[in-house]
Image (tube, rainbow, N blue to C red; front, top):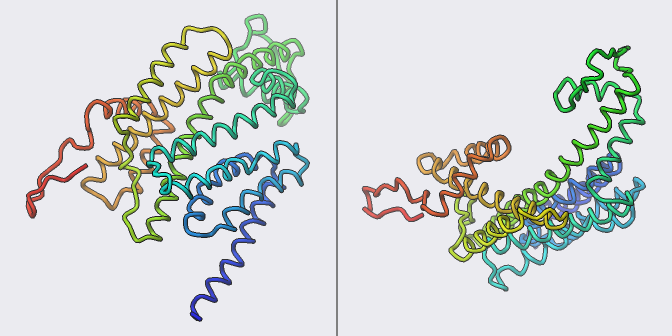
Length: 354
């Protein structure tokens, strides 16, 4: 028996239950955190599954669900919370056996993300007993209306330019006492109606975009984390984010997605409009991720040790200036930007391959 295996086993026996208890406690104290954890856990459970930590990978997704149920959440949504991590585990486990490419694995994890999120949105629509986006907007407005700080919230939203003060109330006065603000009842009603319209438009745009952007990002990062763990176990070279590139066939699929956006953009039907938003969000996310990979690849060519710093820079651009990465990603589909500027190594006189 190896004497060094005992401390490692004890550490694993201790930290895994502690991680489970920490996740359960955080969700119990703040129930909305369950949704965030449920969709971020594949970043941890996918590499754990490839490293052979099967029980940890199977048990940890249950912590947010159990904490959400103990906090009094909806039982059906609580049962749906582990769905996404559990769908990801077979994908990363049987990837090599089924000969799935890295991009194919990413797309399967993204599909699991979208299916899980759509199931929760459908259940949420049933709970609010109405259309999803207007129902969420109405719920937010009703919450603000019933809050003691409703006047202060509307006042700050107006000062921030989110809401516009109606001309009829241009000379209206507000009474402020500490953090409390009292508005004219008619003005408050007008601002709440305006906020309802703004939220409905925003949710219609944001939720589909967040669904596809988040699915592709989490899918790609989870896949890369799982492949890195597998490479450490097998002693092989792990794939890097800067090496992510679409094949000719995959570029054809993206082109079909772009044509689908154009074809459905002229329809006014709600279902068709939602499908158009989802396809456009997926198309833009693919191009932005490709642009980020190209940027990191070009910057790390001279300074490979600064790859984490360049990855952080790409993440900031993705969040703040996504259009720049979008243009770079689209250009990379026509011109191999990563091969531009390749220099011949003077030692072996061989051109570096992309």
